[in-house]
Structures are given as structure tokens and as C-alpha cells.
Length: 471
Image (cartoon, rainbow, N blue to C red; front, side, top):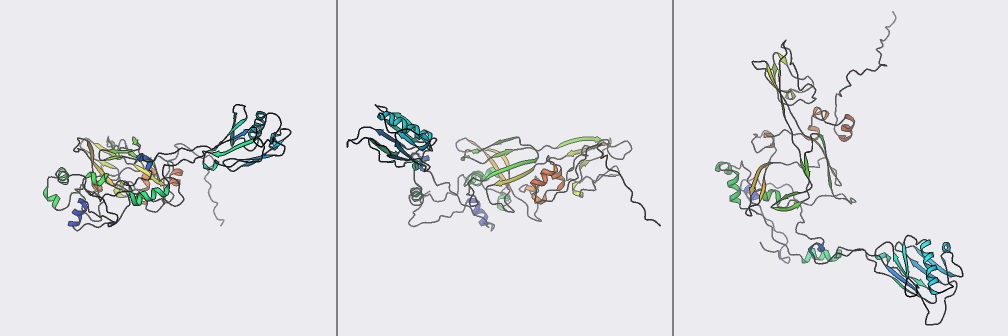
């Protein structure tokens, strides 16, 4: 590994081991690209270089005492104070105090004048915007503090009062990350060293021997030999798209229309990477097997365990005992999973299970095709050179049209459908009522035969026969 020379180099493009393999087979056809910022430190305070500063409120003082010119305080002299939000109030010296008018008593001792001005500030427009404390050796000093912190609170006090000395509001601070934006831009673009692209993280030969012992499989390219570390943990967080004006980060909303969430974590962890804030959801599906028998008259089953399921499965069964179990409302490939009858008249029924998820991504551009779906198989754990365990994931691929299905394909293990491809029977069999299903799936037309309430009858529903035409 070596560093970029920014005066001579701009880009460093390297093929990964998987890329080299695909290129040698004539299958290297990149279609997408992504940008990453893993090597950029946006906030230098996290590196301990420039500490963060907290917000602070500005403060000022007003002191009443004998002035050097010998002039005493008089009537109709003023002092103007401004709060952080820009509220400006002028207080006037008078013979009598009137807090409603902002007039404070100019007579009496210096402490009396300070007390009267304090009462006016606390009773007027500055009541909740400036706090006032009184002190000093002669109780003649007022300390004013802005209620709202920030640099905007460093305002100026103007006055023409004899025997009065003021200091302007100072010390107000907005707080910062420890580095101004202009300085951060220069640091990131011009002063941060960059490493050349790293394209391998594990020993390739070691990974190959773990994946297969069949040399023919490696030669004909039927086995995916991309190591887990490069596939899953290298450059795992590309930058996403956010529409203009959105202040919040993209977020997932996942609702289970059928199935249950059995566990979740907010992060994905591993020995090859730091914890990444990618939520992990855990679920399981369960197939149930039932044993029933043919009815005594040979017509139907003594008990049909799949009778009340709208969606009964998608594996053909055929005819049993001369009875065609095909549901007329379902296509041939949607016949219940049933086998038999056997010599003792028994019949096996298998109730399939599935997950039905409604997935939305908020705070991002809503397009017709918002998601890329990838499916991986967990093949257990491996041990790295530090004797740390990490999971091995094998990516399964979606088969192309007329392509033979192998264990490397999703279709070998699962059946799946997205959006319009999901059968109405599956959606109707979900755990939501019809109104909620239609609200959530507004772009998909759903036709459900809702279950009625057994025994319910409308007493106002009367059959009326139309009278015949007269001869």
C-alpha cells in the first residue's frame, strides 16, 4: 500500500480478485457505480485535534456609583438594552417607579436605583429574555444574563445616565464542532493523505479450498469464489440519495403482513469491520404436516386441515380417491399440498408458511423500483488469523429465463414474488383486514372474498319478486 501523490495522481482503479476472474471468463460487465466516504473525517473533534465548544449566554453589568465629573443622575435619562432575539427596550429615569412604562426611580441611594431598574427589566418585555442579579459591595451592581445562548446575545448597551457605568454583553457563543466549515473543506480536499485502492483482504487460495474441492467447478466458473470479507465487509456503506429539502436521514419501515418478528438488532457486527448501523431483523417460517383420512364414502376427507386457508400452497397434488382437489378459484399450480391416499386410507397434508412484508424507505426519492433485493445463505462460521469467528455468506443468484436451476440460484431454495407478482390469495390471507391492505397497497389491485360472520343475517334483506307484465 502507498499514498496518493495529489500533484500527479487523480484516480486509482483496481480490479478485485473476483473482477479479475470474471474478466478472464469474459463475464466482467459492470453496470453500476457507487461513492464512498469511509476515509473522510468530516468532524475533526472526533479525532481529538480541535475540541468542541459548547453554547454560552452573553452577560453584561450595570453599576451605579459616583462619577468623576461630579454630575448626579437626573430625570429623563435613558439606558437601552437588547436581548438575544433583538428585543430592544429603553428604560428612563423618573421621580417615581412605573414598571409598566419602563420607568425606574432616580432618587434614593445607588442600591435603590439598581433595585428599581431591576424591577423594570423583570416586569417588562425582557422578563423572560434577560435574567438580572443584584450584588456588589453596596448592592449597586446589576449583572444581566441573556436567557437565550448564542453569539447574537453579544449586544451593546447604550445609555446617557450620570453616575452609571455599563459593560456590553459578551461571552455569548453558538458552539461549534471545533473547526469552521471552510477549514474542514481545505483539510479534506488538500491536506488529508489518501491510500491507493485496497482490493484484497484475505488469502485467496485459503478461501478457494474452503469453498470446493472440485477443480472442474472452479474451471468452468460454476462456483462463486469471492471471499466473504471482500463481498460483505469491504466498502459496505455507499452514499445514498436524498431529495432536496429533506432534513432527516433515510429510514426503513417494515411491516409484517404475515409472519412474526422473532428478534432484531440495531447494528451488524463482525471481526472484519466496525459495528455498522444496519438493522438486522430475524424471522422464521414453519411448515406443518397433518395426517387425515379419506371419508367412509370415499368422497372427500374426514377433515381438511387446509380448508380455511385462502392460500393453501403451490404444489400440485392431483386426484385423490376419484376426487379432484383442485380449487376452482386457484390455478393448477396453487393446489393444496396433499399426498395419498395410502393403503390405510391416510392422507398427508402440508400447510405451507411464508413471510409477507410491506417495506418502505422514507426520506428518499420514491421511484417505481426503489429496492435491490439480494439473498445470501449463511454457511456457518470461519476463523481468521486472530482466531476470531466470522460468518460465511454465499450469495444466491436469480436465474435468468431458461437457465438451468442449480444450488447457486435462489429458485433452488425459495419461491419469491414482489409487488404485482404477489398472488391476491397471499395478500388476502395476511393478518390485516381488507381496508388496511387496500390503503397500504394502493398501486396494486386486490380482490379478496371476505369471510362473513357465521349465522349473521340482515333482517331487512327481503326477496322481492318483480311483477309480471300484464297480458
